[in-house]
Image 1 (cartoon, rainbow, N blue to C red):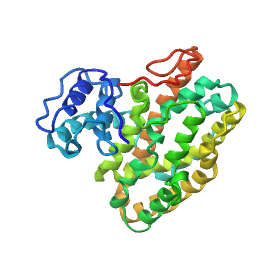
Image 2 (image 1 turned 90 degrees about the vertical axis):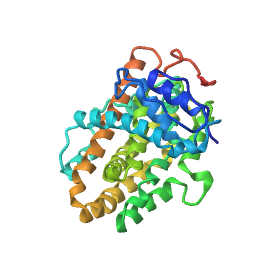
Image 3 (image 1 turned 135 degrees about the vertical axis):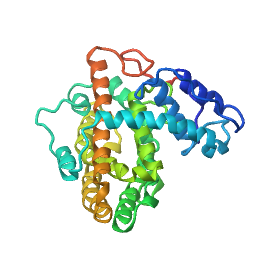
Length: 332
């Protein structure tokens, strides 16, 4: 099931969205407006371009996916995003140091999952789930793009992790399905793309990062670094989220499913995927580190936004007041 085109957030996204509403053909030049690589306008425009490689949008011709003019426009947006990410990350080629840093959690952690476990209200949990729905309703799909770009043990190990993500052969156990079940349990709309209009750029950027890494062979090692970073940090945060849901009386297995599974996945990714990839192509170490650091950067930016909003007593979405049930999503 596809979704409707979202409401534009500026001249860049307006150009892309209006273009897709037409029959495939010439794409006009993107406006030379101020382009904040992390901003609402650019990130939405990029997200819409990438979504054509997933389920697309209602009324948008499938032929737009590989239309040369649109790909050229997307490349402009990607360049701006990549340049900013590289300038905002430390870089380096010590993969072990980059990943091991993530394995050690501070005793006095103050992240989003800590907040929701200890004091989060139901409306804040629901907001968090709305944010994450932009990814989790297509969980593991972006990572599948990297499979044909790997070889040998790295490929088979990553496929083994993906097999678990896709439910081990059982459609009802797919992680995307389990997340939809969680949304249903929270009284939210689990329709794919239902909340695109209310999710801010800081969340869109985390998904765009995956799509960009997955769709470019040149960034295959960055995708592997991203995947490892995500799996390393998921198990402990999933445990806290499971505790938050239990405290609030919400019955769902999405987070409990990730506690043990992702603890195993991170070992497979570090040892077998990264290990074999760098054995074959040691020059890709810097890209693996970049993938880890870029993931950290964008997740930290999102977490800062969520916590600052909630501590200030208001919602973190582009629409909705503090305490709003948000049962009916904003539509484009």
